[in-house]
Image (cartoon, rainbow, N blue to C red; front, side, top):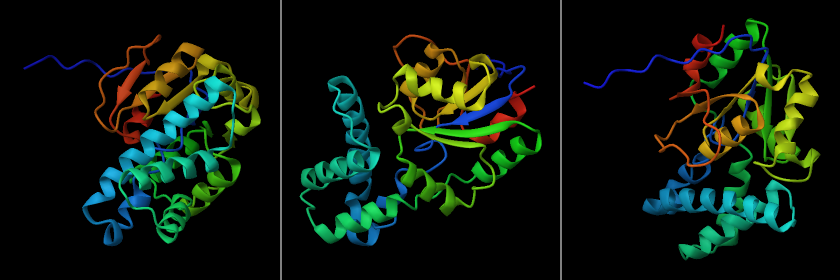
Length: 231
């Protein structure tokens, strides 16, 4: 049997900053909740929608054509529905409404409250628009947990632009190395580490390592592992 690697512990962490979509909130939930209408296509829809959503953020960032994440999410959904020949205005409206009420992953509330009780500062740093993030946090009943909910709209460009990660440093008043950043998106975790944050990649989906600069400090399968790794 291969030797298990020791878990990485992070020292002197003062704040934990979380990506929202895919890390705290389940991006497949909107399509899953409409299985009765989508049938066996719900998983394909969820995957195409998410992939195109991310692609559009990167393309808009490179081209300098910023639009907020709500528009990007709608454009990506339109692409997914057209790809699967599911173009239906009522279905689209239902899916977009559900995206404002995405469920959280099971371990999220307890993990966040454990960290909060230890005196750590907690924040979200997300591509999401302020309206989207406010709706997700409120739906999850986590409004009392976060010290800050940071949207890329403050800098007008999507991740992984360095100015996005700088938002966490500036707003929390904590040096980059004393912020533990967590994302389930490998490209986000690697980019945050390249910026200078301490990073744990929450690799929920068993993705292969990225081939881009800077490797996260460690890798976990769910956020439930996080409290045990902070000294």
